[in-house]
Each structure stands twice: as C-alpha cells, then as structure tokens.
Length: 301
Image (tube, rainbow, N blue to C red):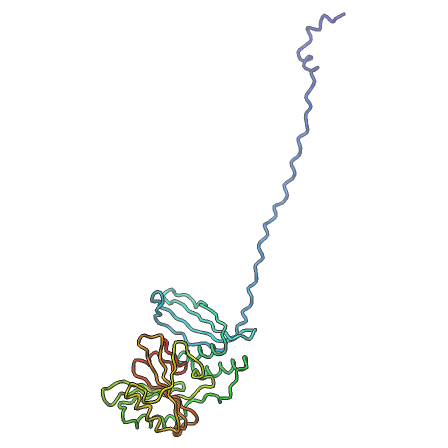
C-alpha cells in the first residue's frame, strides 16, 4: 500500500535524499623556492704589465698640425718586455682638458728602428747623449747587435779648439757664432758677399750611425765639390778638402718637400787635432731647421 503521506514530506528531507556532489581536494601549491642570485660573470684579471722602462724623453708641448690644430703635450718611453722585444710607448695629453697622460700607442721595433727613433729624439733635444748611449748599449746586449766601432766620445776641448780655428780661418765666411751641445759643434755664419746665412755642424760618427742606413724620404748622392751649386758651400767643402787627409761629400736631399732642402755631408779623415772621422754638415739657412744631424733626415723637429 502506497504511503499516503509521501506527498507531505518536507522539502528538506527531499533535498537530503538528492545525491551530493563529490568535492575534489584542491591541490596544494608548491612552496616557493628561495631566490637564487644570478651568477656574476667572472672578471678576467688584467695581465700584469711586463714592460721595463729604460729611458723616457722630456715632455714636449706645442701645436701639432693634424686634422686640426691641437694643443698637446707628449713624451716617449723606450724599453723592453719579458719576451726581449724592443718597445717604444707614446703618451699624450691635452692640457686644456686637464687630463692625465694617456697611452697613445705601443710599438715593437727592430734594432734599427729603435736606434733611429732614439736619434730623432736626440736631434729634437728631448734626449741627452749620455741617456742615448746607455739605452742603445742595453739594446745591443739584448739583441746581439754589437759593433766593432768604439763607443761614442764627445768632442774634447782640444778638438773644439781645432774646429773653431778652422771656421775662423775660412776667409769666405764672416760673423761666425759658435756653440757646443750634446756632441755637436755648431757654427752659424754669413757669406763674405751677399750676407747669405750658412750653417756648419761637426760631430763624430756613432757606433750605429744613421749614415750606415737609408732614411725614408731622403736621397743620398755622392758628389764632388765642383758639383755644388752654392758658391759659398762649395768654398767650405774645398777648405775642408785642403785641411784634411781625405774626405768624401754626400748630397742629402729631402724628397718629401717641394723646396727640396739639401744638406752636404762631408766625412773627413785626418782632420788636424781631431781623432778618427769627423762628420761635417753644411747647408744654407732654410735647410737646417728641419735637418737632424744625428738621424740625418728632414722632419719637423
């Protein structure tokens, strides 16, 4: 028999009989791992500077013509490294910026290149002759570039007196002025007629002299005195020839200049009261400001 009261069952009771939805467990979120700091790139250690300084030039300043006119100061440092290479370093700074000197460049040089750079600094007056001698001796020992020539000796007082007497006795020259510095004896004078300014320079050969090698941009031609166009320079060469046992004349000409500046280089043997060879450079006023009597080249000094 059906239950007559079924209709009157409570709604709640009816709902209780409905199937309950299954509640799924909520998955637990994984615990956050502690933050790991990013690895820093390994800093590469700078190699130790193995440069060994032998000498440095005096600080040089002025206006250098490049792309523009720059006021600058600069100096060079010469030496070697642990590999036994000859090295030149060049430093510069711009005083208007009040900066420290910066390394401009480093060059590895052969012995001949090393020697020529030192000779150029010697001509500029930025390096003393005694410093040059000590530095080139170290380079000789390092590279086995010894020579049979004796070490360079400056002109003695007796030799300076003999050279002064020679210049004073040349009757085609007047108003002679003399000075001696770093192994070179200078004579500035005028021609007896016309007042043309002439320059004479005297020195002894170096163990590694620039005369033994070619200079870039300089032509060398052996000439006789009668080949010289300038009458007064020819007269000086003739006086030297009469004064010494033997001599040779080399015409040095700048091939990089439109004016073709020329200097006559006389190598005299048996010059009275002067031991060994005496080198004499003769030129007019225009040539000598750019001529280096040690480097035997024509460059901006």
